[in-house]
Image (tube, rainbow, N blue to C red; front, side, top):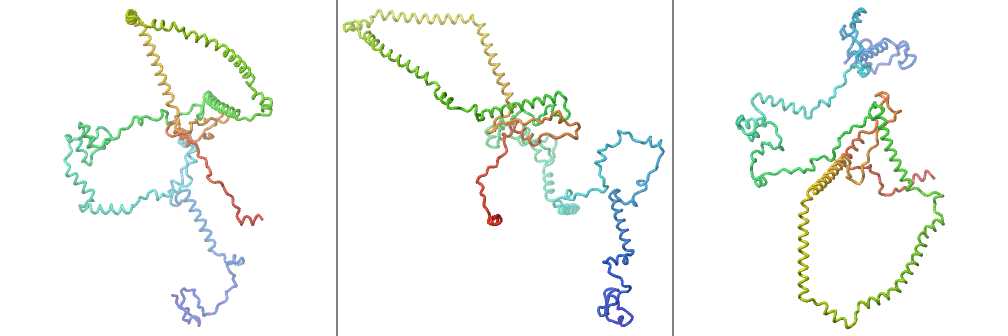
Length: 484
């Protein structure tokens, strides 16, 4: 509290202010001396301009200068040593001796890439944060204090007990005992030398099937890659940054042939789907000729066939009568024919003898032919060799065809694999320097096509949007009121 004002009747008042400049509200207001106006008016600018304005300007200049020194030098100039601010000028001879060679000077690009500001970048706090860091730190400090007293965590106590129970491992220890040693080395559980399977070595197959879960046998087809093509294929020399003239021309020729083939397919499709012009359109005469094609010739052939059938019908009755006369002998000759068919005992014996004679001749002939085949061994060997050579040639051809088709993409889906377009630049588009080089193609599309070519995925196409329901347009009432 400020002391009460003294002097005069105003000083005898019992008002206690909060500061020395506090004014008693009961005291009458005093008129300002000199008639000075307010500071926020234009006429009071010069009147109220005092040393505080100049002090504000000086303070602003000092702050700006200090921030520029901190930004450019990293610290104020007053705190930097003299060696970093001043240097000793040497003579021209010493300067020439200490001058660096041109190859030792830093590159211009390195000077451009250097940071302009000397202020270090802000520290990334999130990169140094550890989940539950404070909790883990307190826990670690607690166990350090308990460790000084001889107390250990539960995991550490259990490990120490296991070490005490486990006998010392020496050179004579079997591999199966190594499983109980915490300090044992790593091993492959899928290998044949697995220490866990040493106890089952030499056991019966049925015993192993009943006591141990047998691993699934990996199929042979899974051990082979779907394609022998490399994952990343090296492009032709013509597609490099600075190709030679011959390699670039060969690449252009290859792209030209692909484009010609594509153009021929488009022309063929246009010819098949082309609508006939006025000159090629069919007229009534051409349509009538096409409808009458072959009718006249068929009529002539039909007339000729009718005449031939009539002649055959006239000749057939005569032939039938002759055949009937030959087939029906006279009534008296039937008994003679029946008696002629009956064979005597002598005739039957002769027929049996002739039959045995023919069988003996056939067997003798077969034996003679087998004896003759002994003299054909040389020709038979030659035929066998020719046959084996032909079979070997066919086998090699099939193997070569299989190897040639192994690198080709297979038909895995409904779509057929299509090679991507060649990334080629014309002679006028070749870059003169590496900075002006323009990228060609897409890395993502190249990897996607590589997976299709190596039969890892089936060829696919971009899904097309198909609207399930028809769009319905509704005219709002508010819109109708505006248009009307």
